[in-house]
Image (cartoon, rainbow, N blue to C red; front, side, top):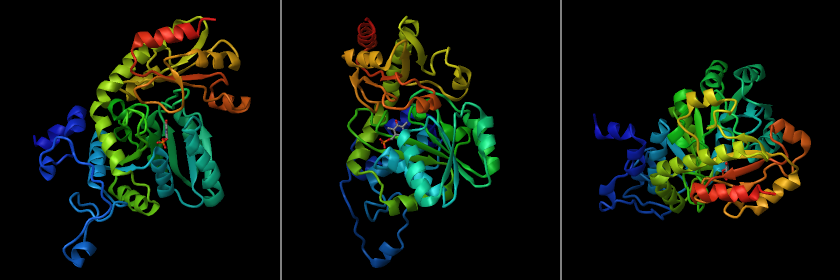
Amino acid sequence: MSEQKQYLKSSKLITAHYGEEYEHYYNSIVPPIFMNSLNVFETLDDYFDFDRKDKHKYCYGRVQNPTVRILEDKMGALEHGIGALAFASGMAAAVTAVLTVCRTGSHVICVRNAYGPLKTFLDGYGKEHMNIATTYVDGDRVEEFEESITDHTHLIILESPSSVIFSLQDIRGVSELAKRAGAKIYIDNTFCTPIYQQPLDLGADIVMHTTSKYIGGHSDVIGGILVVKDEGLMNQLLANRELFGGIVGPMEAWLMIRGLRTMEVRIAQHEETAMAVAEFLEKHPRVRKVNYPGLPSHPQYELMKRQQRGNTGLMSFEIDGTLEMATKVAERLKVFKIGVSWGGFESLVFLPHARMGEADCRALRGDKNIIRIHCGLEGTEALISDLESALTY
Ligand SMILES: *Cc1c(COP(=O)(O)O)cnc(C)c1O
């Protein structure tokens, strides 16, 4: 087996060494940050004939950068794609994917629990400027997608598990359906990371990650990634990234490469702590519901076992009580700090539905008082005892 092939079989080898060419930078074990906006050429022909996909040819930083390229090679390999493209944020990646696949008048099917700002984009800009029509589905059953497909359905947007109520979609089932309908499947894989789920293998066309979460892993960087398995789609996305100008900066890419190296060990610890926290909450008399796909009581536990290898540190729960009581619980927590985002070293708590109307809460299947927590790396005992005191009233 070639060294390359051997590397591709191991996520640990990929994050440690794959995509790096030590001989190009004095055998440094850590690649340099190519803090560079342009490259120079010997002749004009060299410039005009330059191949944008040649890994050793660069011309301008909005097109490609060697540090960014290392991150992309690793992500492409981890997700079993043909390549990846890195963006300045998860939303830059998401919007570039939508604008590449959709055209004026496209129909999109999107899970109702998808990332909020992406839905805002579809319903706002997408609808107003491109006449995009979006049908929202719960997404638990493949039939819901089947019933929603029209002749103009070009894109199906999944997020499995979704990041507030942690509902899953049958990626293989929906992908087979999409293939027959000629639609592309886009899936936000941020919660699982490529370590716990590889949607391209299950039939998805575009995998999206915000690297602001576990890939960065230290709450110090914003970024996004798209991974694909089709050459044609890759070329279109690459061309559009250049035109839209959304490439990530080299410094951020370098931080993401560093984050990737420890991601697998970090998420294993996030998972171990989250399982213990979920079990603690599930038994707590003040808690009426815990949403965590690692719990055997999760309604889609069997599907989770089929398509995921694990779960990470994010979950939500509902207390038996009002929004005011849930707010007090969040404010009484000491180790868990109030804040959005997740995936870093720190524990966080947030009430994503606190300012939402009752009807919207019902549609999203999470109460107004739903509490989302991210279990960080401060230690299982510290987190459980923090929750224990906050729930004592
Ligand atoms: C944070 C988040 C995003 C958006 O990523 P940004 O890097 O903030 O643009 C998308 N999807 C999910 C599930 C997220 O949690």
